[in-house]
Length: 215
Image 1 (cartoon, rainbow, N blue to C red):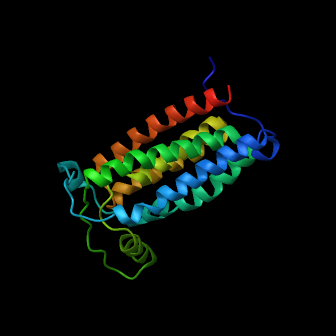
Image 2: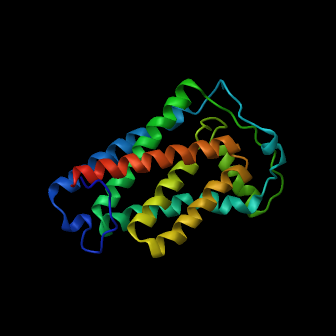
Image 3: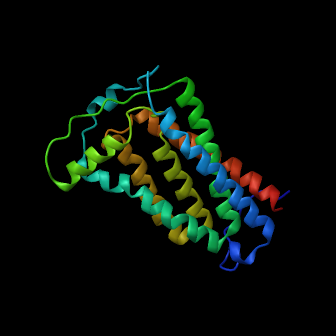
């Protein structure tokens, strides 16, 4: 039985598929939007775990990495439209993987909340202001697994599945986004590792399910 989502050529986008594919995309997008709305209510203490290790103690704050950290929003804004118009199946798999990722992460946030201690950022340069903006708009909870990492990996993996030649460059940037989470002190190494693991499983499951659904 074929379960893999293979990279598809232009012409297999949502505009060339049937109503069923459109309904699946809209339903997944709606579920994803509802899940995102739950992030803020969960992003509060008290924490039950602090996953800081000796390795985290040695990781410096690297302000320039706030640029790739914030770039996830640009990558996401470009990724979904490209997937929709290039391959409806890859778009469906991406959305489903994101839904599964958030569902798993929220179990941890609800029942095993974690916390990351952030440094005091001084300076009035653009990078310092950007870091303070990040800290000010995201409480120091909802850390394990790292959603920033997990969603970056989900997008990177699906870019490779869509178009290996171009996708490897996007995936490399998504990897940098994942790494940036620990260097801007938004997450600990364990959070990043957890995000990678959750995203990897979610991608495999979504690929299987979407392949079976369209098989």
